[in-house]
Image (cartoon, rainbow, N blue to C red; front, side, top):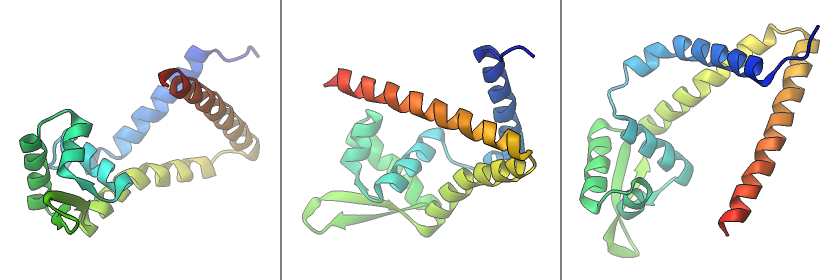
Length: 152
């Protein structure tokens, strides 16, 4: 049997990605928020709390646009806003329980599917997959370190 090529590996990845998208299409289809709002929610999940100014900086938009983005998420019930006790001019945004639950469901939904599918693999195939992902993660981390160092 010949050695698989990078193109064959990418084709398998695309097939897996399509299967994940198809399996989670219902959740995404019923979601009534924009991609920018979703990105803001993922950012707030990682940061836990951020100022409207930080959101503006992240998205490359003005303060009014970032404020409007935050307001829409507040009205949807996914984000809460409060004044910064240290600086009354700043408005802080954070996810509500509903926002955190949504982001967790979207992210973890794929992990649940992947766990289920991986549990059907033979031990040898699971070991090969694990070795492959570890190897790719190692290359990616080295590449990321090179990119970070070249930016300095």
